[in-house]
Length: 188
Image 1 (cartoon, rainbow, N blue to C red):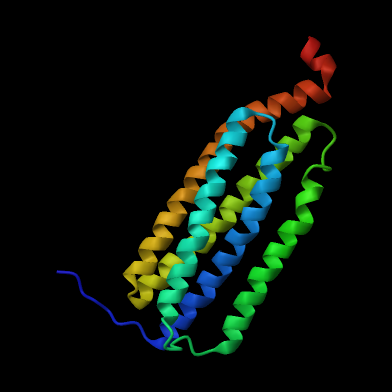
Image 2: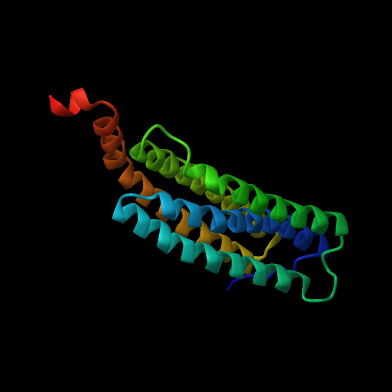
């Protein structure tokens, strides 16, 4: 029989802090993914990004709902400074994505190189998201919040899936860069 633990206001505030950070990152990535989809040359990469954009939007909604549940209008999340910091982080992440979006299309020495850089950045972002969800999952388990732990496990699995998908595309994208930027090697 499973033991049910009651979380305290301090537990919920700690979880809210990490959930806000993950929410900010996901909101940033909604904007970033839209710019990255425009750069993708390979249909498989573009398809993966389009699908992951939908996953990311669902994650934003789920994180917001979980934060709302933790606060549930009772003001149980006691530290307004943490709430302001979480909101500021979210706004800053979104602003960063808006600023970087146009730059994605300008980076690189060729179209293939731009796509490689974009896939590499996506892979790195997935690693950061995986870390966010691992932290949330572990904190939630420590304080006995199984609902938040399950949400974090589900989101982490989605990020791991995307990272695996991106990793699968890397060899072909790298080959395209080599072919485009070292034509003598390709002709040999």
